[in-house]
Length: 122
Image 1 (cartoon, rainbow, N blue to C red):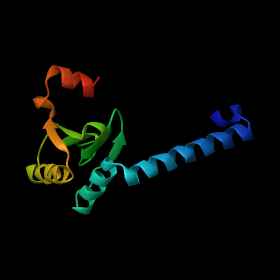
Image 2 (image 1 turned 45 degrees about the horizontal axis):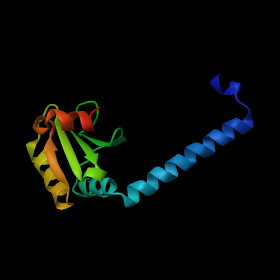
Image 3 (image 1 turned 30 degrees about the vertical axis):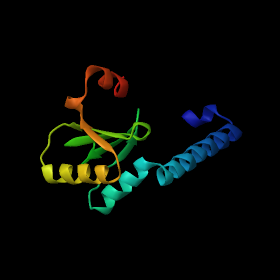
């Protein structure tokens, strides 16, 4: 078993570090704009799982049958939408409306110039 390679103290230290990371992420979610955007989308009846990558990513309806992805860059006040297989334009339009109501600029991946594409998707 993998855990047999560690002492009890090392395992406890690792667990505490993970708990600290979750606390930090939870606090960020509460105070940063991407968290407000995600909560507002959910309040409007649209469930989109949230993932942390180069920015913050939200998949509709999920990562296995994705219609579109929101890439949220709070520091640049930007949401970039990547359409994969759009079936529900009404949901996409609602999400765009919510993002804009929170002051985000919204762009689609196909609207990015090469420089911006490389900046946001290295």
